[in-house]
Length: 128
Image 1 (cartoon, rainbow, N blue to C red):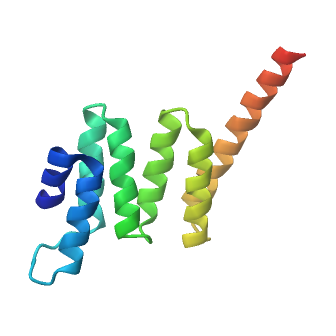
Image 2 (cartoon, helix red, strand yellow):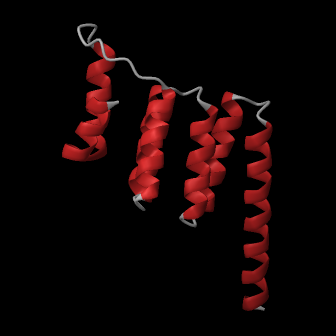
C-alpha cells in the first residue's frame, strides 16, 4: 500500500494507477496488497474530506479487484454523499452484474431509485 499511497500523494490518481500497474506487472517487486488496502486508504481520504480522491481510489480498487463488492458499495455511497445519484445507480448496476445475488447492492439500488423518483416528483410538482 505504501508505494501506491506515495504515488497518489506525489502525482495524483494517474500516478497511483501507474504504480499499481508497475507493481502488478513486474515480478521483481515483492510488494503484496489486497483489496482492503485501498479501502483503508479511501477511509483515510474520506476522514479528511477528500471525497473526490476517495472515489478515485475506489475506482482503482475496482480496477485492481473487480470482484470486490464492498468497493462498489462504498463507491455508490460516496457518489450519493456527493449528490451524484446517477453515478451511484450505474455503479450498483455494475455491482449486480458482478454478483447478482448481492442483497446489499440490490437494497441500496432500490433506495437510490426511490430517492430519484421522489426528487423527480418534486421537480414535476414545481414545474406544474
